[in-house]
Image (cartoon, rainbow, N blue to C red; front, top):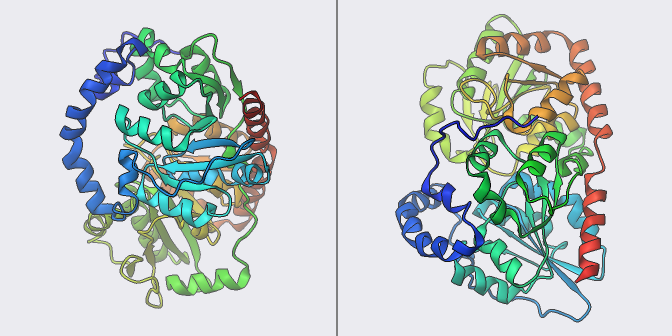
Length: 454
């Protein structure tokens, strides 16, 4: 059942209101976009400086793109926009299948420089072109649309850009929303102004939802004429065959400076406070003679200085990957403050704490990949961004849910001391992953239907 948040009195930013403007008010969105982006410019310049890599293809953000392949007769061009690294990785199986179709070609854009680098590294042979998504302002969006000239556009998860969708609408180009997710935060925002929300969502031709909860929410919010169906999560179809053989895993452990007999606790996409939780647990466990070390992969790699301050009183031998990949021998805590390496590190973990899930955090990062590799999981009480997935994992006996940091430490200690329990959770997680595959097949069928209509 959809909870009614319409009278919740939720504070919405000006930008959130703009996302919900009626199509007839697209000009107001355009007028207000520039002053808003100028106000936000210092923040984005700071992020660019912190994360680096933004110079490459920077003109793409203004719709100025070059080296576009000539569009051939009979070839359907699909423009896919994926924001985060996780979304790009989820696209892997789908892009492989689309690349095998001689009648279509994929143009792939992303918002971040890290996403751009990952797209180039992983999908250069599967896509016709890769670049940066333009700023959602009329002249930039229109310029990019004129250059790319797609026959179908695809957005991932919850990225709904008014100008981009407007361009699709006026050009009569179908727009699909794949892996659709509707978080608690987004739901509250849309329900707060539900009358204004549906017009901005109208250009979406069809929605493929990740879970039953997401499907119910989308059906409640999208216009009644928009088909919404349950397709499952594309991340379940990831190729999770071991990419590291035993020799490579052993070599990676040596690179991290871990003893061969130590267990590895993975902090998967951690947020502030969770790094210290893991460090304190490792410190306590080792003092009790439990042979375990910590491998922390922060969600945001640029938090190095903040993490170092938080761990300044921890007595563990700690190493940051950004200083040097090779850690000293007998390292006890390794901080992998890099981007795009979580999947590699997950393969050597013995147990994992899912980030952004321990209070005060409540949204959770995705547990899917770790479960797919058979890693026993611990996560917090809410997991609001992955609530149904978390519930499914618990029902499959593949994870442990905890109330707080103290509870998390107890659960991690239980797993660390009980190899039989770890094996049970590992098998259950892999079986759970296998049972939920199939989203890629549904997405391909839907895409095929649309490209044959154009």
